[in-house]
Length: 272
Image (tube, rainbow, N blue to C red; front, top):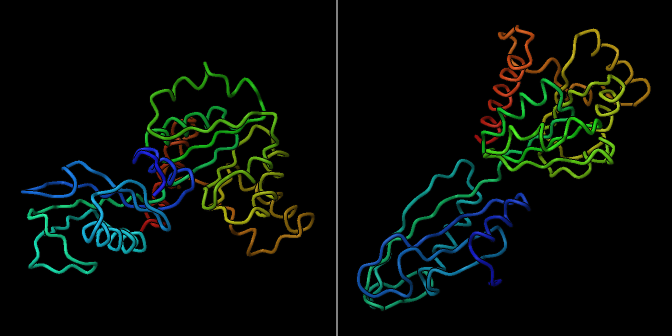
């Protein structure tokens, strides 16, 4: 078991975008290898920390791996009697006490990349930043990504990743983790078109959304087919318009609410 804290282990799983389970000794009665509060982090192929070893830990790891492979897994408690009359799956522990262990699934959190942090993009970032997810912000205009302008996100729950404008937007796509949802809303139609083409060529992305009118999309669709060589099925991966059709307001905040709500529904379906 690598010598890292459980907090660092949870952070490592998040960065790797791997699921896991946080195992905590919830209660102890009598004698037990570890006190209440001891923690173990279980990932798909590795563990960090310890709840005392022996049968308790081995059974907890087995169950944690089962939870990792179960969509929508819920937290649960496991109880262990530590005496020589109880033979566990991995042997006997006869400390004489009783232990309750709490298993808390750590799912892979959603990731969203917003290309274009103008009026709509910033409003959308403000809404999404209130959720536990990874949020990537990219804009080719330096003044859109200043610390002063992004100060409205200082209290974010999300982990914010600001991509410096020295990178081309297409290069940022290659840095995104698999499953990242992409929203294209730049100030430049040519940039939007290039991003649509690059997104379709980037394997493993989640949904791809484009803000724009029907006329804009008709031009893009023709260009993606004729110049990009993309099939109709591939082009259909791009959703436009995005948001909730029932919300017809044109104000940036209204558009952002609709787009965020649509994304949250996507997250819910994916998690289910």
